[in-house]
Image (cartoon, rainbow, N blue to C red; front, side, top):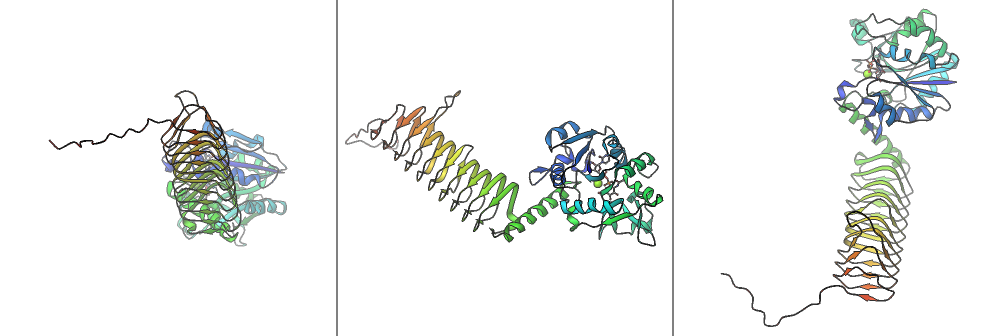
Length: 452
Ligand code: UD1
Ligand code: MG
């Protein structure tokens, strides 16, 4: 039985922000949400988050199954924070205590802590730091057993020299935690109820505290300011990039590759520099993404080429398509096999049929295009009257000449042809040629103006 308590009531003064600290993102996701997602990997558990500063926004901006919030209206210390959860904790559960601002803690590390509590009554995650400043120091006795934690502000010079520090993560039997929490006092340098004081109580009661180290020191780093936030962001992105490269993805520069969400891809994928992937992104085999592209909630099939500086959102692309450079595919865009979108083309809520092309300088919105359509440069669907949106329906093999305005609602049937420069306001039937522009007039012997 597992009860997980996440402390997230602190203000995060050093972030210098109106946003509660635990809502600041790493990889596009709130710090606290990272902790909640990791805790889900430990299987069935109760999940309690202690909130205080910005409680209302924290409650609405994170989610997890069976999540409960407990308010700590005054932040009187980490021990006080856990005291607020006492009535929710089960005697026979292992209670795992986490911090909402330590986002990259690994599930494996947490699992090994929980596992230790079946042999020992308590496990504490500690780490050796070259510079331990600011952290609580771990005190061990002659037998090398952990006997207490002393906070930086309460430590004497000898204790300050200790490099083993408290990460804050601990796992302990519920009944013991419930016994010790009411005994905490705030008689210390900060006038706070320190959770860390329960270690001395464990030692008093003859309970062994098993010290565990994380696989990587970075797992236990907290975010207290924007600099640390950026450091953890880079670490997260690099770790993710390394995993993808090991899985066979070519990243021209793993330091200029950012995933903010779920990313998956097939084999022989090449991603050039400065690309950002947000939301849920899935790439097929042999996909090439040129520099400076942003893909948000996008699915690409096999053999797709996305040329430089393209921006794709809520878009689905089938196989053998080519996009960009400088394309903007907005939500609701679907490209069928072999479709082609060229430079300075914007699409929205539009399906482009098999082998159809919109190669240059166009806006196509609320439209459906059949197969083998060619949309000339500078074609605009006039889909909006200022209040309502209207649809443009284009059949198979339609040819739209350059600089055409298609005033929706309008339908161009199969094999229709539109003369360049037309403003099309009426439907065009199959195989018709429509030309809707002023007739050209040539005036002979035209005298050019002269300079006055
Ligand atoms: C704490 C530990 C210290 C450890 C360090 C690791 C204590 C007394 N000290 O110190 O040994 O080395 O973390 O980072 O526990 N919080 C609440 N309510 C409160 C106070 C804090 O929810 O009243 C939350 C904060 O939001 C934060 C976490 O608890 O997520 C830790 O609090 P913080 O003030 O950062 O503790 P530290 O002084 O860093
Ligand atoms: Mg801290």
